[in-house]
Image (cartoon, rainbow, N blue to C red; front, side, top):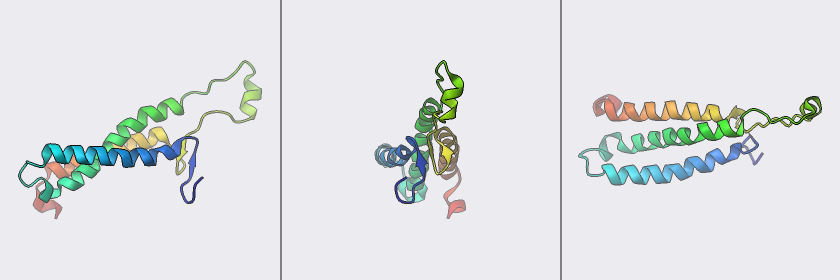
Length: 123
């Protein structure tokens, strides 16, 4: 645990992953869509930020499934379980694969909302 960030296992790496994706997706989408009239003015920046959360979720879900997969127990199952060695990787007490689902649905849903709704409804 570092400061106020509660994590277990490799759950901390979701935060640097989010910031790295933020830079890559934000710059990529702005370079691709900067020529579209009114994109930056009409909530294009917010849509880029929301798409960043969606892309991070697409990466975090399989990564979390792999890390939090079924425990690999040795021949002496009861002795292994006694020590609590089952894999657990989470951030703020939520497993990484659940973060992936929440970020994907929330991020892409918000991005579609910003891109599909008329700008006058969002202001």
